[in-house]
Amino acid sequence: MKNLKLIFVLLTVSFFTYGQNKYDKVSSYGQYQEKWALVEIGGLLGFIDREGNEIIKPQYEKILAFGQYQEKWALVEIGGLLGFIDREGKEIIKPRYEKILAFGQYQEKWALVEIGRLLGFIDREGKEIIKPRYEKILAFGQYQKKWALIETGGLLGFIDREGKEIIKPRYEKISAFGQYQENWAVVEIGGLLGFVDQEGNEIIRPQYEKIIKDKGLVGVLKGNREEIKN
Image 1: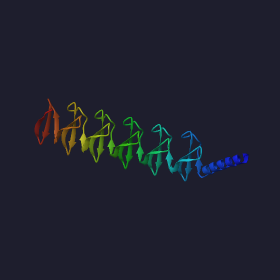
Image 2: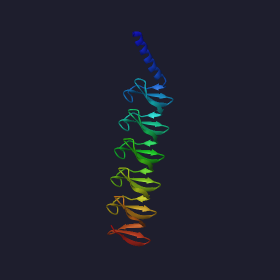
Image 3: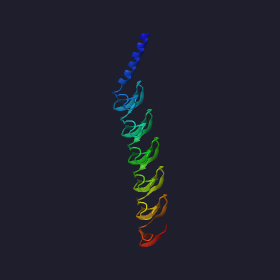
Image 4: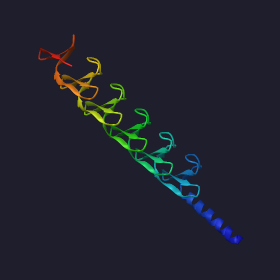
């Protein structure tokens, strides 16, 4: 009976040792998670547990520590593309982004992502809130508390904090709100000026070469002056 137990122990140890020996490198347990060890084959990284089971097959070129972006996630990279795995070994976001910024830089639960120089957002659940399609996204609140300026193809618009496009990118220039009237911002298309309000409505379509503030607002087109009414 004792011999059988000894054989069983030796077989178990041999199997476990063989499992570890198939890797080029095996890191210490607990560096990433208490019961996981980082393993490497041919420059690709994955994880095994304390029983030698392969939790994550070696497939990533880089794996950052859990918690650097999200408490339960670790950033992974393959072929220059980034994604996330969770503490169960599940791929929450497949590696597809060229850049992922820290959560909270634009809003608390969002992270800016980039593909082919186009920008969008993901949330803390791994959902793509805004598909990467903008060339620039400014910080929320620079123009309007709940809006962020966006740019694509040289045209400007706004998104809100829900990810909705409040004003589609169509203007070449957008001035700050309140320069001419408290809730209005000057917009420009093809050298002609108009106004949008803080609800995203185009109050005055771009039609003036100049707008003058003089006891009210005056629009100028081909030398003709016209009062702009609220």
